[in-house]
Image (tube, rainbow, N blue to C red; front, side, top):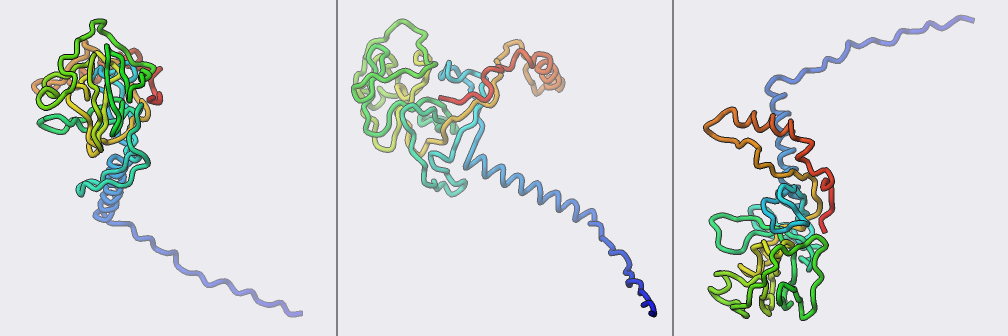
Length: 260
């Protein structure tokens, strides 16, 4: 039997892969960076945003130096540039710790963080430091506190006009009915908080998000070097100082704590 001759497969020259030019490589990197920036902007403006606690008005729930994440989606996302707000999952509720734009007079927008005490149509009253909502004594938050035993009298029982702005009554206040589309906010550090008792309720359009979790906490340090524009070595000194005192400055027990 005659054996059949096996033919070798036709060989083809290896495919030449064209290396991208220098300009194409730069463009690819620029596109990747732009996509990352767009995604970061979308997340920051519509889902989650980071905030830092600068004051003691929410102690001991939130401490100076706490860094937290806030859910901006739950109260309805405000679309950048056009100002439209998407439907909310729910409106702020009494007990929520929420972030909002300060409703009083200010040179620039300032973000505040307080606890929502009451919503539209509810009646707020403080009698000798005791908070009542709709005539029922409200339960104080677990980590709230009073630091001043002295009780200030009620000079203006019904705040109105300029009396509202010229110094609210923190220990005796109201009764006050929260207007439609507004929320009454108070700090958990009741004797050391500038809040709705002083500058009025928070309009719904000023609400930004609900505080969720403390992702970092950094103990203030008065001995820490300051960064100065006239001293180029001030920034390196601060970095070295923070590295040396890192372990003692971090509040490890507060990291990833849910805000309630």
